Image 1 (cartoon, rainbow, N blue to C red):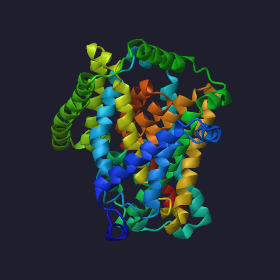
Image 2 (image 1 turned 45 degrees about the horizontal axis):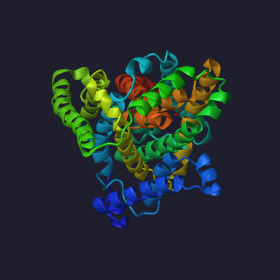
Image 3 (image 1 turned 180 degrees about the vertical axis):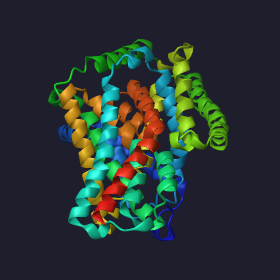
Image 4 (image 1 turned 90 degrees about the vertical axis):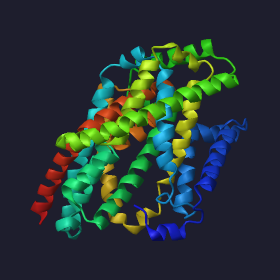
Length: 422
């Protein structure tokens, strides 16, 4: 939510300058990650490049260099680069192999949903015992703001907006929980990126049989190696034509379709069918799926997935801008509540992964399909391997569909806890 104070304190307000800084950060990280110095190699073994591409931009916000609430870079990246990346990563994927990964992806996703639905009420119950004065009343009631976070953490921003309309928290309460949502979710995403960079170790921890995921990854790498060639100007122009042509088509379909659902069906909001972003992600994914069964898949040879990955990294940098660690100092107790909530989600995810011997890929993507939605799940999946991005998209779409109803039920439970505390 834009604030005049944020705009006044930001050192840089020109998005062109901010984009240049982000590009320089991405370039510096990749340059450093390829240095041959032993110390550098050890550093990037522990701290993956993708995590730095995510964390370093957050310092610009934390130290007041950039105000993400005034910047349009995330909006542009999520509406233009994300759908283009989804198309280019999906068109390059072996979809039959991806769809044959088995039920563990859905099990881990649903575990993540249950973790959010249980974690919120438990965190609120603990708060009612430890600090009952925080419970509030009327529009200021803490459960109202928490219900909007549940919408965001099960589905996405469209579901969060729906819960805002349903439970009507005050503007101040909502703004506090927006900050909790962004910071806590982004910290967890940083951990997921770390897991992706060390997936072998986590697979061993979970005693997981990751052979199905390995087969998809190995098959994709073998296909790329077999068809790889130095891209010509024509190749790159075709890749951009497919990527951004699909973005244009996706917007052309998504905008009127969301408006039609919103105007025609009162229940559309509950399923996010009135959200243009929901349809944008879904249509772009469908286009990528269709193209993957056509000669367009040959664009993987000159590097379609690499171009898509570039778009993902730019998106990651703009997402990083939204994480302001200093915000924790303004309302620390609310961030503790959010942290407890997230911890319960994480414990359930790790417990289920250990119980069913799930590969770490399903843990990371199943969680981020809930917590991050369509903007983060494919990024998390691509961090494990670009060919796996479609799994993140498909699970995020499920989250959009069930998010409002699940968060509404979670809100009812939290309302009862708050009433009992009062």
